[in-house]
Length: 254
Image 1 (spheres, rainbow, N blue to C red):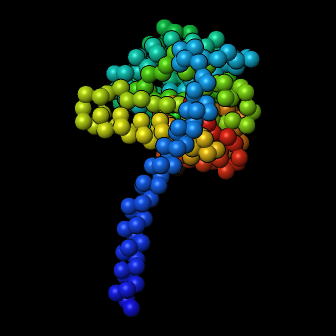
Image 2 (image 1 turned 90 degrees about the vertical axis):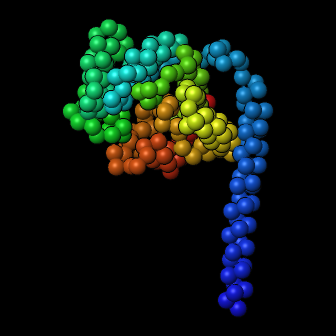
Image 3 (image 1 turned 30 degrees about the vertical axis):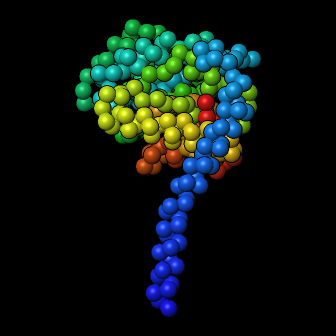
């Protein structure tokens, strides 16, 4: 009797481990194809975003911890964004390299750039919360300090926030720049499948489970309702996504 029960359990576990990935793969592929047919197929070219009724100003929040080597390149890409009004807040999260001097120099050189300094490293969530309190505008674009944005990103992402007052966040589509190493090539496949395909499918099914922390646009009112980012959360992107979803805010993919 016990052996028969163990055989049933083993067969069930084998069936789950073998068929579940296949089922989910077909689910994601079907959702991704529907997303393309329903949304992307009708969109204009990536460098020709559709016009908006109005263009609310945006605060761009960039937490930085030891990003001296790349933050200049990140800011150059941000300054090239094609959008009427935005500010850039560079948050030095207790860096131990030359990041404080670099972002101070950037703030002195460019009127759109402001430097914020934290005395010690407290994590990305605290950096974002601090910047949110200092931001002048009601929409936030949050990116990592080592990333580069497309010049049309705000026009594409803000169309969701402008057209629907129930949209709290719009997650972007990150792409890997470093492809010369084995890890970089593995990440290309990971981001193409997990970010590119699964998030398209989740958008089709009505719920994007988590935003991509590397690039996401938020509505301040929604963040204020859920209490902003949790400093004790292991991953701030999953935490803030679920807090917004629980309060029935909409999260979308672009």
